Length: 75
Length: 488
Image (cartoon, rainbow over all chains, first blue to last red; front, side, top):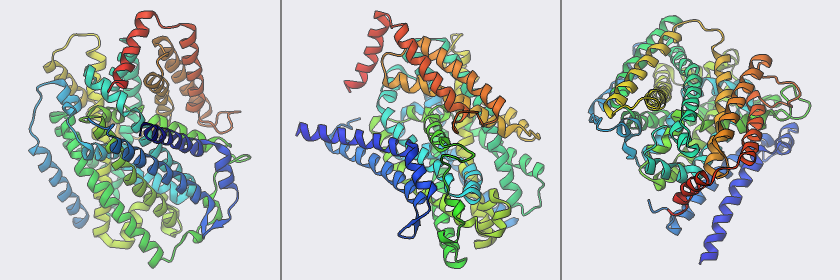
């Protein structure tokens, strides 16, 4: 049980760090912004910003959800 | 004009009725400055959004999306990262705030670094940097009144009108303090971001279905992100997102939101509530701006995109609603700025050097807010060609608070010498580079002046942490602060 909790805690932290990395690491946005092929009709740069934004949003929702379930949020 | 102003009047009257019903309670300065730390997650979330997204979002960022395209999405990414930062620092900041009755951002600096002077420096940087943005906010309101008057008011008349409206609103900010700000933020936030998002989605549907505009109608240049070889520089986007995310929490009126919550749980829940709203609202605004940029009328005046498209799609009624949405967003930002500055003048400047009782603190705070409202109103009515440059300059300067703030919250080793030296040198470098190079720092690969100064600031902070180790007593005190957080 404790192991499972620890895993989720680290999963959240790693997800947060990945969000920061993908948002800020220049080669990612250079790759997304210099070529303009479409994926499912959408420009790559839009997909890049959309994916990063959705990932940040879901990481916080997941963090809150797992803290709520584990009873860490008592006050 | 009767229709547009009538809609605005209904909203404004509703707001004043709600503010008038709030019970006046100035039994302590904590009540006045942070609303007795009594607010739950929903109030916190809306209060954060209403302070974070000003009315200028609809003009400046809507306009940027219309004129420049995808690059404007940096505001969405850094706004979401700001909520992520809020989630991470919610616990230490709230726990220290509650235990030591912290009321302002400089209070936290003074506690963490056990320094009286750092409180003054942080407050001065915050107050001075906030003024140009307050004036810009009031002028943006004037622009809105000019537009919804359908050209009847000149720009100067519209600004004066806007100043009068916001001035009337400040009577309640001064009287009630933070409690009034947070409660009105909830009302204003519902209008600005819930109704605002609904209108944005409606306008996107109108653009796609009626105007037959889609993403494929846009020029390829609108999806361009500056990279190697670009005139902005390869690190330009990195710099915008980094300084935006870190800088958000450096504004005193944003930071104080962490002290108004009734607990860590509410604060974290507010982050979980605010982030999907932020994603949908800001995402919709930017997509709307990009699509609307194709319209010839918007192409000529991209900053008016919100008003132009609202009027074209829904006539004067929708134009009036668009005005209400922008007014609601602007008010939250202006109120928050004025309230936080007043509290800082009393608590961190005068209260830092003179022993003041509750009554004196509240009176000084109210006087500070009054003076600031008058000063900002007066400046708003003047032609200030360098105002926007000053605001950019202020932003590059204030983000220097990020280093002592975040390093102090998450790292035990930092000390007051590094904090003061780092942020002072960082501030001076940022301002100097901005004044000399106007945002185009040579050999910086697109880094802004604030980002360059931030790097130097971090180096100074870390060097001092190792070169001047904390004394035993100070190390124990800091350890005690961190233990307080980990034991909860």
